[in-house]
Length: 281
Image 1 (cartoon, rainbow, N blue to C red):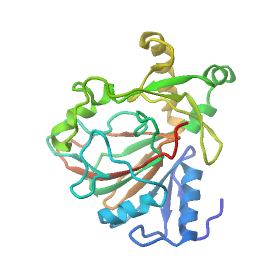
Image 2 (image 1 turned 180 degrees about the horizontal axis):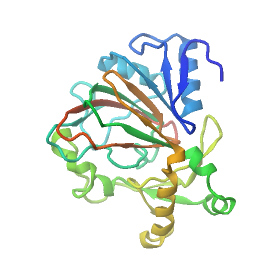
Image 3 (image 1 turned 90 degrees about the vertical axis):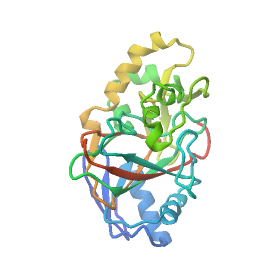
Image 4 (image 1 turned 180 degrees about the vertical axis):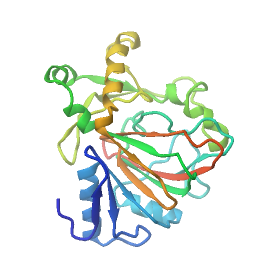
């Protein structure tokens, strides 16, 4: 793919590319934005280095792609409810996002994408893994594709944000609300078609996918466990090493990610903006 205004360097065979010759703090002209949008669709997650963004500049870039989400359980930055601060202090044992997931799949209209900005990073560790769900679908046998096409699954925040959930364990330092009780369940296709590219992708994740529609959790578990393992095979992934000022922008419609927790004793501070999807699917 040729790009007119940006430099694009893929970082793996499955997904991911670093974008050069872009300052996200500036207003992007239409040609540059078009190139970035195309690179986003081509590579599913794109990365920018050496950026300096105010909260308003961070939000302005994300708004070029759609309206911004206000997280229902995590309190936003003061004065900027659309931005959540993802902080792990030196003494914290649990990190936020430390498991494979797709952001906000528990909503009736799941997120389009997320834009994560690194403010403070540890001297080592703290990388993020990304997995292409297009590649995961394409790697299934024809028989498994036929089985999954047409199936729907139940997504909910109750397991992740309940008092025993992984994310809720960060409730003090990140002001995460505990979502005990009924928090809503929504049906999404197990195989979804990307609205912009037409490519098929698996759309289940261990954080928010509870069971298949019309099936008990115990009966759903064997197939879901297989899909969770399959979705994150090494061949479908890339790994990003953060530096201060880095930005990652990933497509939640076709990508899962995992924040590694391997830097105990050091501080890591990120800010995330999530872009709303435009309609149920």
